Length: 476
Image 1 (cartoon, rainbow, N blue to C red):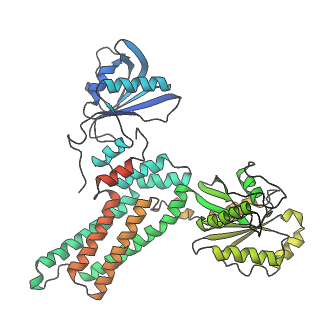
Image 2: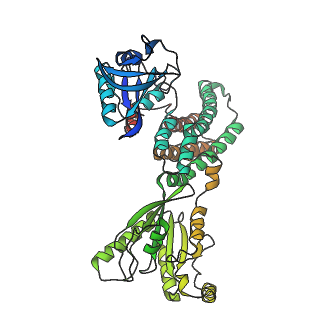
Image 3: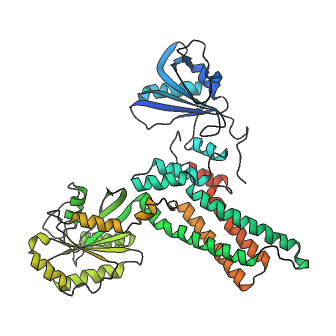
């Protein structure tokens, strides 16, 4: 069962600056708790003499000044929200003051001296969760929304914050709870050999849940990429144009470009937003045989980054020999994993004629490539065909899932719980088909229910909550 706030748990009034740190036109200071209005009335004087915040209606705004005794601190606007119709479910006041850090700190210290305490990171959202204003997955989505760095990340976080993910899980849990209740009722009448739960319906439900959980687990690859950026490792032989391509994509001289082989010896990373999707481009040391110890360390890091990437962008020089092309493709393909996407960029097409380029691509040098691999002729220096290359990058992302607001898992904690829930439902399915005793089937269903409940917070521990909310910003 979800824990509920009690007077003993959260009877203190808390305050914090809810806007970003630093100087700005305005800042918002939030106060929440049972003594919110009392604390506010000690420091606020309305332009209308005698007006007390404690007597004002919910969802109203009031103009006045914050005073420390007789010292006028700042002119402010105060917004009033009353329990239970507020973000945390408690009485809340939001003070909009001028954004000077000095003013913010003066007001904050004044509130503390008059009965409030400073909020801990994520405490407002934690109170909202504990008061039943949202479930745990929605609370975590708030943090994701605040930290979203792309349009896709914003959309996915907003969809989860509005309950899209938790609604799916709630439906699964309710269906499973209905069946496990019937199965456990059967156990109470085991000596009479009665059957309350329709095994055919249970089989259909389990298969439906298996498909949905499998889909959610698989969506994590996309969700994690959207949240953290899709890693693209730019690899290839020395002087293939990897650093030039990175600079062209970023539109800045991020990497050193030189005709000297082995110029790039370490990994260089930067991000680029393409149509709402963040890509993390990783320029790596050129692959070649060398006696240079430092360069060999860089090449080892190239192979390491290659394994970690979602997309491997192999750069080839259009003038490379067939043997060199075969060697590069075989080397990279041999190190790639099944889930990785390969894009081959044939660079320096500006150095040859259109006919030579056509003849080059007709020659049988790409036998190692599969139908899923893409080949794009480009000139990184002249910025030719870069739009085609970025289009190929976008093809690796399931934009349709984002556009259709499908449920996409972005949280590692959710992913791990879903994996365990899927394993439990697999056991349920196997047990039903093998005629396993009902008490063993019931145990596996209970396990599945527990893992699903951990995601939404219907089953939680203080340790889990502590780990989640400690990563929130103060004031949220």
